[in-house]
Image (cartoon, rainbow, N blue to C red; front, top):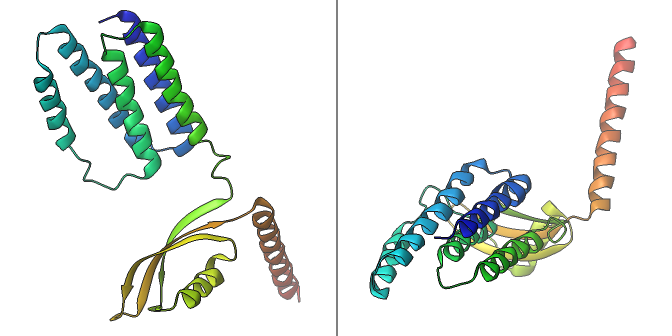
Length: 207
């Protein structure tokens, strides 16, 4: 295996984990998963490239690896993207049939796609929440009005996850926009109300 490709993979996975994922999502528990997946796939690819094994053996090995599933908790979509990016970087670095420049370019392409696709400006002002409503809704308009009374206007998508007729509840997943100016206004009004309440309390104590 080329030391240049090894160095390129280590730099790429460091940028992915410590330059993109951790600063943006702050989930340090997934750092070890991304690093181990990348290095393990790189080692497997390097071994397959250095030994005379058939394609069927390689496919069978990766079939065994694909059985491993993370059952501790459900991964979100952006975490799955980082997971497969770490896998792809290891595969590229361990490939012996590609030139070093092509591998480096493909690695840069993967990192660039993550940088742009997961940029905070793309999802700015959009929030996703899972709500449990104290009512079993059968009418979509009433459901949207109920959710709107909780999260405000700007509902982008609304998905019913569960309707419990026994306990009279509805579980929904809602994605809605929260413009910066509206958040700022609400924060300012809340701070003003708190300050006014504190002044009234002090005045009452002085009397």
